[in-house]
Image (cartoon, rainbow, N blue to C red; front, top):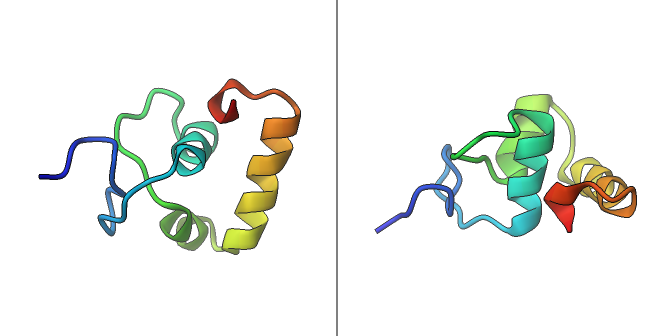
Length: 67
């Protein structure tokens, strides 16, 4: 059984804390469903590496979604 918020809402992949944080930071801070980094990259027409760099930047600046 897939629990809400633990798997990507588009592809069903199990999510990491970082993927949930990116979705909240980039799409909706109150989200209860999330996209994985692959689906986020497709949505924003960017690369997974660029999103990982962005997540690291947010983590270093103290964003609470990445602590």
